[in-house]
Image 1 (tube, helix red, strand yellow):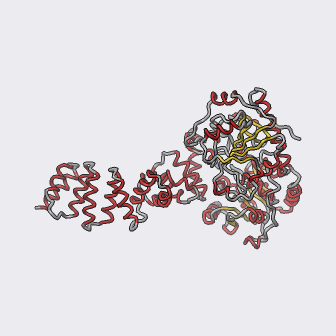
Image 2 (cartoon, rainbow, N blue to C red):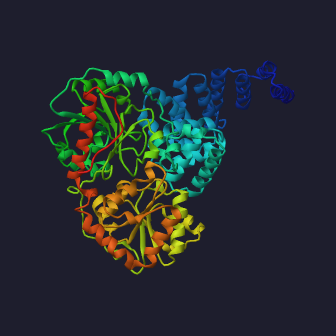
Image 3 (cartoon, rainbow, N blue to C red):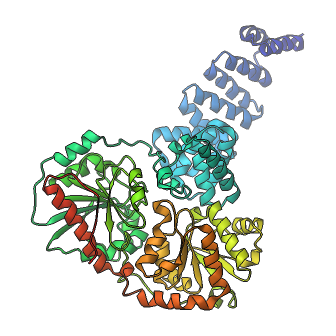
Length: 624
């Protein structure tokens, strides 16, 4: 009889008649109920949205030995949904000992720890969410994992999310970024192809979800780059706020007071390998230099004592944008320079609060800093040609040589490492690139493969993940034994190994920036192709400043012919390498004193104009 009544109860539950199912099931209860019956009643209560009561019954059933781990996991989930987080957390912590990677258990604990601010516990558990197939679990992971951007698990996560949410542009752009970072060349090619098809059809909407720094890796033109508008929580300047900033009263001084804002003020950052000597060389009789330092403490700890040479350093990492703005005003800073733009550890919000009468973007970001209130962007005639002007809200200040400073004093220049010590073949022409993996775009791989096909005896030495990069070149018809993989290493041995190569190959559409100047510093010529946006014109700027303009090809086809030509006739490269080495200490590229004088001219012209009550205007700094 009880079996018939239970079958009737199940039939009622299947029909969604929860009250009837509950009544029939409760009639079967005895002083010692069957745990399976308790689970059934719990299911009925869930259908009636009585989640906590259902969880109580599941706990009781588990205590009777009925599939205890699975039933208790369900109870924890119901307590969590019902807002009874203490009970949910207690059960989940107990289950974590026996089910340490169960996504539901982890989701409950991460959600509770996140709410209570226990971020160390969140960091321990968050990556375990990626094993789930539950969209809710994966979406929570997507909020947490990008904070650990170097974790390759992000690639797995966003592949899953892309399948689950194919119409979400933020997931789409995030996946493209992680595919580049972790050498998933197939995914990167598919996503870029799809995006370019959309753009060819006039649909640029996905770019609103792209971060500006991600955009420079794959978008080719200044017109496209300015559409990358994913800035997160960010308050843009207005024309009214800009006008008020310029019109505000400002106390003058005999000196020009420069404020540099950056999160990179530490010895071994790439930016400081460029800028350190220029900061040191500023004429203190005419310029007062303050560094508003947003650098993380762990990096400041690497300081070798040189930071004190760069200027007065004021830590601002723990200060609000408003507090930094007030400090800049109180110090009477004449010109505030943003060395970060839309890259990590920036303080662009300070600029939109109207901190200084003249505000300038320079060096850290290769392009327009959309929605950031800067009067000028510093460049040169290569990275900022006239035709780029309409795509910038900043006015152009063009230096006479290159926009990029370089430190010839503190940069090491060790003896060359031998190919034998690096495990490289001695008897081949060796191309090299040491750019980050995010610059190894489908375009770059295609162009490089064409170079190797046109120079069939040459080899290529690159920094990448070995298996995927070998597969990528194999798919392009290049034998894997012609590809050699380099790993990251400290700066001095890196400069030593660079010299073992014959010719550097540039990346597209984003060139090597500091990477190119490092290769030139090491005496390695670099071949590039003229790009269509700031990121793709940097190597052209550097090669002209070192006196090697003939290494700039007009387009990618010409690049292939130029690079392959040197590989097929190595003797033709010898005079260029000799010229590079001869020019290293005489040409403008590594002349920090010359650069500093030109930069000071630029700052003086900007400040003089502001002090005269004149609006900013584009200008070129005259050559010496």
